[in-house]
Amino acid sequence: MSEEIKLMKGNEAIAHAAIRCGCDGYFGYPITPQSEVLETLMEIEPWKTTGMNVLQAESEIAAINMVYGGAGTGKKVLTSSSSPGVSLKQEGISYLAGAELPALIVNVMRGGPGLGTIQPSQADYFQTVKGGGHGDYRLIALAPASVQEMADFVGLAFDLAFKYRNPAIILADGVIGQMMEKVVLPPFKPRRTDEEIEKECPWAAVGKKKNRERNVITSLELDPAVMEERNNHLQRKYKTIEENEVRYEEYMCEDAEYLFVAFGSSARICQKAVELARAQGIKVGLLRPITLWPFPTKAIAKYADQVKSMLSVELNAGQMVEDIRLAVNGKVKVEHFGRLGGIVYTPDEIIEAMKAKIM
Image (tube, rainbow, N blue to C red; front, side, top):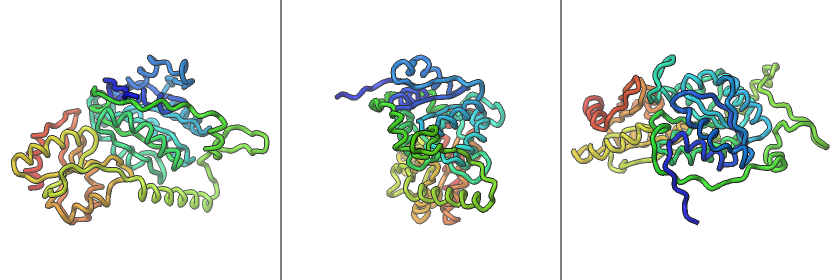
Protein backbone atom coordinates (compact mmCIF):
# COMPACT_ATOMS: atom_id res chain seq x y z
CA MET A 1 0.00 0.00 0.00
CA SER A 2 1.49 3.36 -0.99
CA GLU A 3 2.19 5.99 1.63
CA GLU A 4 -0.29 8.82 1.97
CA ILE A 5 1.74 12.03 1.59
CA LYS A 6 0.12 15.39 2.36
CA LEU A 7 1.29 18.99 2.39
CA MET A 8 0.18 20.69 5.59
CA LYS A 9 1.07 22.85 8.55
CA GLY A 10 2.44 21.38 11.74
CA ASN A 11 -0.75 22.31 13.59
CA GLU A 12 -2.84 20.57 10.95
CA ALA A 13 -0.65 17.47 11.26
CA ILE A 14 -1.46 17.30 14.98
CA ALA A 15 -5.18 17.26 14.21
CA HIS A 16 -4.97 14.63 11.47
CA ALA A 17 -2.68 12.41 13.55
CA ALA A 18 -4.98 12.61 16.56
CA ILE A 19 -7.90 11.27 14.54
CA ARG A 20 -5.78 8.52 13.00
CA CYS A 21 -4.37 7.47 16.39
CA GLY A 22 -7.82 6.60 17.69
CA CYS A 23 -8.24 9.69 19.84
CA ASP A 24 -11.51 9.85 21.76
CA GLY A 25 -11.72 13.54 22.47
CA TYR A 26 -10.23 16.97 21.97
CA PHE A 27 -11.00 19.90 24.26
CA GLY A 28 -9.40 23.24 23.47
CA TYR A 29 -9.64 26.96 23.08
CA PRO A 30 -8.27 29.05 20.18
CA ILE A 31 -5.08 31.03 20.61
CA THR A 32 -2.45 31.96 18.03
CA PRO A 33 -0.24 30.30 16.81
CA GLN A 34 -1.95 26.95 17.45
CA SER A 35 -5.56 27.69 16.48
CA GLU A 36 -5.37 25.52 13.36
CA VAL A 37 -5.45 22.39 15.53
CA LEU A 38 -9.03 23.10 16.60
CA GLU A 39 -9.98 24.64 13.25
CA THR A 40 -8.78 21.56 11.35
CA LEU A 41 -10.67 19.21 13.63
CA MET A 42 -13.86 21.23 13.20
CA GLU A 43 -13.40 21.17 9.43
CA ILE A 44 -12.82 17.39 9.26
CA GLU A 45 -15.75 16.62 11.64
CA PRO A 46 -14.35 13.32 12.99
CA TRP A 47 -17.41 12.81 15.19
CA LYS A 48 -19.19 11.77 12.00
CA THR A 49 -16.58 9.16 11.03
CA THR A 50 -14.74 7.88 14.12
CA GLY A 51 -16.94 9.15 16.91
CA MET A 52 -14.22 11.42 18.27
CA ASN A 53 -15.59 14.27 20.34
CA VAL A 54 -14.31 17.77 19.51
CA LEU A 55 -15.31 20.67 21.73
CA GLN A 56 -14.29 24.30 21.96
CA ALA A 57 -14.47 24.91 25.68
CA GLU A 58 -15.37 28.26 27.23
CA SER A 59 -11.81 28.71 28.47
CA GLU A 60 -8.43 27.05 28.77
CA ILE A 61 -9.22 26.14 32.36
CA ALA A 62 -12.43 24.42 31.31
CA ALA A 63 -10.58 22.57 28.54
CA ILE A 64 -7.92 21.05 30.79
CA ASN A 65 -10.53 19.94 33.32
CA MET A 66 -12.50 18.27 30.54
CA VAL A 67 -9.26 16.47 29.66
CA TYR A 68 -9.00 15.39 33.32
CA GLY A 69 -12.51 13.97 33.19
CA GLY A 70 -11.96 12.13 29.91
CA ALA A 71 -8.56 10.79 30.97
CA GLY A 72 -10.08 9.52 34.21
CA THR A 73 -12.28 7.16 32.20
CA GLY A 74 -9.29 5.75 30.33
CA LYS A 75 -10.04 7.59 27.10
CA LYS A 76 -7.41 9.02 24.74
CA VAL A 77 -7.89 12.77 25.11
CA LEU A 78 -5.85 15.83 24.28
CA THR A 79 -5.83 19.58 24.39
CA SER A 80 -3.73 22.17 22.61
CA SER A 81 -2.85 25.76 23.35
CA SER A 82 -0.09 28.32 23.24
CA SER A 83 2.03 29.79 26.00
CA PRO A 84 -0.41 32.03 27.96
CA GLY A 85 -3.12 29.40 27.52
CA VAL A 86 -0.86 26.68 28.90
CA SER A 87 -0.20 28.92 31.91
CA LEU A 88 -3.92 28.82 32.61
CA LYS A 89 -3.95 25.03 32.29
CA GLN A 90 -1.13 24.45 34.78
CA GLU A 91 -3.29 23.63 37.81
CA GLY A 92 -5.18 21.03 35.79
CA ILE A 93 -1.94 19.57 34.42
CA SER A 94 -0.64 19.18 37.97
CA TYR A 95 -3.91 17.44 38.89
CA LEU A 96 -3.46 15.05 35.96
CA ALA A 97 0.07 14.22 37.09
CA GLY A 98 -1.02 13.79 40.72
CA ALA A 99 -3.85 11.46 39.74
CA GLU A 100 -1.55 9.59 37.31
CA LEU A 101 -3.79 10.14 34.32
CA PRO A 102 -2.53 9.70 30.74
CA ALA A 103 -3.29 12.65 28.51
CA LEU A 104 -1.70 14.71 25.77
CA ILE A 105 -1.09 18.46 25.91
CA VAL A 106 0.18 20.32 22.85
CA ASN A 107 1.92 23.67 23.36
CA VAL A 108 2.83 25.68 20.27
CA MET A 109 4.97 28.35 21.93
CA ARG A 110 4.71 32.09 21.39
CA GLY A 111 6.72 34.92 22.90
CA GLY A 112 6.15 36.39 26.34
CA PRO A 113 6.04 37.20 29.16
CA GLY A 114 2.43 38.22 29.46
CA LEU A 115 0.48 38.34 26.23
CA GLY A 116 3.80 38.97 24.50
CA THR A 117 3.69 38.31 20.78
CA ILE A 118 2.12 35.83 18.42
CA GLN A 119 5.57 35.24 16.93
CA PRO A 120 7.53 32.03 17.69
CA SER A 121 9.45 31.43 20.88
CA GLN A 122 10.96 28.62 22.94
CA ALA A 123 10.53 30.37 26.27
CA ASP A 124 8.13 27.81 27.78
CA TYR A 125 10.95 25.38 28.59
CA PHE A 126 10.79 26.27 32.28
CA GLN A 127 6.99 26.31 32.28
CA THR A 128 6.56 22.81 30.89
CA VAL A 129 9.79 20.84 31.11
CA LYS A 130 10.26 21.86 34.75
CA GLY A 131 6.63 21.12 35.57
CA GLY A 132 5.15 24.60 35.68
CA GLY A 133 2.31 23.81 38.05
CA HIS A 134 2.52 23.12 41.76
CA GLY A 135 4.07 20.06 43.35
CA ASP A 136 6.87 17.64 42.47
CA TYR A 137 5.78 16.25 39.13
CA ARG A 138 7.11 15.73 35.63
CA LEU A 139 5.70 15.79 32.11
CA ILE A 140 7.04 13.56 29.37
CA ALA A 141 8.08 16.32 26.94
CA LEU A 142 8.65 15.74 23.21
CA ALA A 143 10.13 18.50 21.04
CA PRO A 144 9.34 18.08 17.32
CA ALA A 145 11.61 19.68 14.72
CA SER A 146 9.46 19.03 11.63
CA VAL A 147 5.88 18.70 10.51
CA GLN A 148 6.51 14.96 10.17
CA GLU A 149 7.45 14.76 13.83
CA MET A 150 4.36 16.77 14.79
CA ALA A 151 2.36 13.91 13.28
CA ASP A 152 4.58 11.10 14.57
CA PHE A 153 4.78 12.37 18.13
CA VAL A 154 1.01 12.28 18.69
CA GLY A 155 0.98 8.48 18.68
CA LEU A 156 4.27 8.29 20.57
CA ALA A 157 3.05 10.71 23.23
CA PHE A 158 -0.14 8.73 23.78
CA ASP A 159 1.83 5.47 23.97
CA LEU A 160 4.18 6.90 26.60
CA ALA A 161 1.37 8.56 28.52
CA PHE A 162 -0.55 5.29 28.86
CA LYS A 163 2.58 3.20 29.46
CA TYR A 164 3.52 5.29 32.48
CA ARG A 165 0.12 6.76 33.43
CA ASN A 166 1.51 10.25 33.11
CA PRO A 167 0.57 13.30 31.06
CA ALA A 168 2.77 13.97 28.05
CA ILE A 169 3.35 17.22 26.21
CA ILE A 170 4.37 18.01 22.66
CA LEU A 171 6.39 21.19 23.06
CA ALA A 172 6.57 22.81 19.64
CA ASP A 173 7.32 26.40 18.71
CA GLY A 174 5.43 28.71 16.41
CA VAL A 175 7.78 28.00 13.52
CA ILE A 176 7.02 24.28 13.53
CA GLY A 177 3.31 24.85 14.12
CA GLN A 178 2.92 27.26 11.20
CA MET A 179 5.38 25.94 8.63
CA MET A 180 4.20 23.71 5.78
CA GLU A 181 5.98 20.51 4.77
CA LYS A 182 5.23 17.16 3.22
CA VAL A 183 4.14 14.64 5.81
CA VAL A 184 3.29 10.95 5.78
CA LEU A 185 0.29 10.57 8.03
CA PRO A 186 0.04 7.55 10.35
CA PRO A 187 -2.29 4.70 9.43
CA PHE A 188 -5.79 4.75 10.85
CA LYS A 189 -6.12 3.08 14.23
CA PRO A 190 -9.67 2.45 15.45
CA ARG A 191 -10.80 3.87 18.74
CA ARG A 192 -10.77 1.35 21.55
CA THR A 193 -14.03 -0.20 22.68
CA ASP A 194 -15.25 0.22 26.24
CA GLU A 195 -14.34 -3.40 26.88
CA GLU A 196 -10.80 -2.83 25.64
CA ILE A 197 -10.45 0.26 27.82
CA GLU A 198 -11.62 -1.63 30.91
CA LYS A 199 -9.07 -4.35 30.20
CA GLU A 200 -6.18 -1.99 29.45
CA CYS A 201 -7.01 0.58 32.14
CA PRO A 202 -8.25 -1.22 35.27
CA TRP A 203 -7.66 1.99 37.21
CA ALA A 204 -10.18 3.96 35.13
CA ALA A 205 -13.37 5.35 36.65
CA VAL A 206 -16.00 3.65 34.51
CA GLY A 207 -18.80 3.50 37.05
CA LYS A 208 -19.76 0.68 39.38
CA LYS A 209 -20.45 -2.50 37.44
CA LYS A 210 -21.19 -6.09 38.34
CA ASN A 211 -18.32 -7.69 40.26
CA ARG A 212 -16.36 -4.46 40.18
CA GLU A 213 -16.03 -1.63 42.65
CA ARG A 214 -16.21 1.94 41.44
CA ASN A 215 -12.78 3.53 41.04
CA VAL A 216 -12.31 7.04 42.39
CA ILE A 217 -9.80 9.24 40.56
CA THR A 218 -8.21 11.90 42.77
CA SER A 219 -4.91 13.53 43.64
CA LEU A 220 -6.10 14.48 47.13
CA GLU A 221 -4.74 12.77 50.25
CA LEU A 222 -5.10 14.23 53.74
CA ASP A 223 -2.81 11.76 55.52
CA PRO A 224 0.76 13.17 55.27
CA ALA A 225 2.37 9.73 55.47
CA VAL A 226 0.22 8.39 52.66
CA MET A 227 0.84 11.53 50.62
CA GLU A 228 4.58 11.17 51.09
CA GLU A 229 4.49 7.59 49.85
CA ARG A 230 2.39 8.67 46.88
CA ASN A 231 5.03 11.27 46.04
CA ASN A 232 7.81 8.71 46.50
CA HIS A 233 5.95 6.40 44.13
CA LEU A 234 5.85 9.18 41.53
CA GLN A 235 9.57 9.84 41.92
CA ARG A 236 10.32 6.14 41.40
CA LYS A 237 8.20 6.19 38.26
CA TYR A 238 10.01 9.27 36.98
CA LYS A 239 13.32 7.52 37.59
CA THR A 240 12.13 4.60 35.45
CA ILE A 241 11.14 6.99 32.66
CA GLU A 242 14.56 8.65 32.83
CA GLU A 243 16.24 5.27 32.49
CA ASN A 244 14.19 4.09 29.51
CA GLU A 245 12.76 6.93 27.44
CA VAL A 246 15.58 9.36 26.61
CA ARG A 247 15.58 10.31 22.93
CA TYR A 248 18.01 12.54 21.05
CA GLU A 249 19.66 12.98 17.66
CA GLU A 250 23.32 13.64 16.84
CA TYR A 251 24.62 15.39 13.71
CA MET A 252 28.31 15.43 12.75
CA CYS A 253 29.40 14.87 16.32
CA GLU A 254 32.01 12.14 15.80
CA ASP A 255 34.99 14.50 15.45
CA ALA A 256 33.41 17.66 16.83
CA GLU A 257 35.51 20.13 18.77
CA TYR A 258 32.52 22.35 19.52
CA LEU A 259 28.90 21.36 20.12
CA PHE A 260 25.57 23.07 19.50
CA VAL A 261 22.65 21.87 21.63
CA ALA A 262 19.25 22.91 20.29
CA PHE A 263 15.68 21.67 19.97
CA GLY A 264 12.72 22.32 17.69
CA SER A 265 13.17 24.90 14.95
CA SER A 266 16.46 26.02 16.49
CA ALA A 267 17.92 22.59 15.78
CA ARG A 268 16.98 22.88 12.11
CA ILE A 269 18.77 26.22 11.85
CA CYS A 270 21.75 24.85 13.78
CA GLN A 271 22.05 21.96 11.35
CA LYS A 272 22.63 24.44 8.53
CA ALA A 273 25.03 26.38 10.77
CA VAL A 274 27.02 23.18 11.31
CA GLU A 275 27.34 22.69 7.56
CA LEU A 276 28.46 26.30 7.01
CA ALA A 277 30.92 26.14 9.91
CA ARG A 278 32.38 22.88 8.60
CA ALA A 279 32.94 24.59 5.25
CA GLN A 280 35.02 27.13 7.15
CA GLY A 281 37.08 24.36 8.73
CA ILE A 282 35.40 24.57 12.14
CA LYS A 283 34.61 21.14 13.56
CA VAL A 284 31.22 21.62 15.19
CA GLY A 285 28.43 19.15 15.78
CA LEU A 286 24.80 19.28 16.87
CA LEU A 287 23.01 17.36 19.59
CA ARG A 288 19.23 17.70 19.40
CA PRO A 289 17.22 16.64 22.44
CA ILE A 290 14.00 15.01 21.25
CA THR A 291 12.80 14.39 24.79
CA LEU A 292 13.28 17.57 26.78
CA TRP A 293 12.24 15.44 29.71
CA PRO A 294 13.70 12.99 30.25
CA PHE A 295 16.66 15.16 29.25
CA PRO A 296 19.63 13.52 27.47
CA THR A 297 21.94 14.35 30.36
CA LYS A 298 24.28 11.38 29.90
CA ALA A 299 24.63 11.94 26.17
CA ILE A 300 25.62 15.57 26.69
CA ALA A 301 27.93 14.66 29.56
CA LYS A 302 29.77 12.27 27.25
CA TYR A 303 30.75 15.14 24.98
CA ALA A 304 32.24 17.08 27.90
CA ASP A 305 35.27 14.80 27.52
CA GLN A 306 35.50 15.46 23.77
CA VAL A 307 34.63 19.05 22.87
CA LYS A 308 36.22 22.31 23.92
CA SER A 309 32.93 24.09 24.60
CA MET A 310 29.18 24.04 23.96
CA LEU A 311 26.60 26.56 22.80
CA SER A 312 22.94 26.23 23.78
CA VAL A 313 20.89 27.79 20.99
CA GLU A 314 17.35 28.66 22.08
CA LEU A 315 14.68 31.19 21.13
CA ASN A 316 14.66 32.55 24.68
CA ALA A 317 16.88 34.29 27.21
CA GLY A 318 18.54 31.04 28.32
CA GLN A 319 16.59 28.14 29.83
CA MET A 320 17.76 24.76 28.54
CA VAL A 321 21.32 26.00 29.03
CA GLU A 322 20.89 25.38 32.76
CA ASP A 323 20.34 21.65 32.19
CA ILE A 324 23.32 21.48 29.85
CA ARG A 325 25.54 23.07 32.49
CA LEU A 326 24.30 20.60 35.06
CA ALA A 327 25.05 17.75 32.65
CA VAL A 328 28.68 18.74 32.00
CA ASN A 329 29.29 19.63 35.66
CA GLY A 330 31.82 22.35 34.90
CA LYS A 331 34.05 20.23 32.64
CA VAL A 332 33.62 22.50 29.62
CA LYS A 333 32.41 26.02 28.97
CA VAL A 334 28.71 26.28 28.12
CA GLU A 335 27.22 29.51 26.79
CA HIS A 336 23.80 30.53 25.50
CA PHE A 337 22.72 32.28 22.32
CA GLY A 338 19.17 33.32 21.67
CA ARG A 339 16.87 35.91 20.14
CA LEU A 340 13.78 37.35 21.78
CA GLY A 341 10.58 39.06 20.73
CA GLY A 342 9.77 36.56 17.98
CA ILE A 343 12.97 37.20 16.02
CA VAL A 344 14.41 33.99 14.57
CA TYR A 345 18.18 33.82 14.12
CA THR A 346 19.96 32.85 10.93
CA PRO A 347 22.67 30.18 10.58
CA ASP A 348 25.27 32.92 10.08
CA GLU A 349 24.22 34.60 13.34
CA ILE A 350 24.70 31.31 15.17
CA ILE A 351 28.18 30.91 13.71
CA GLU A 352 29.11 34.45 14.74
CA ALA A 353 27.77 33.79 18.24
CA MET A 354 29.86 30.62 18.42
CA LYS A 355 33.00 32.48 17.45
CA ALA A 356 32.30 35.23 19.97
CA LYS A 357 31.17 33.12 22.90
CA ILE A 358 32.86 29.70 22.87
CA MET A 359 35.91 29.79 20.55
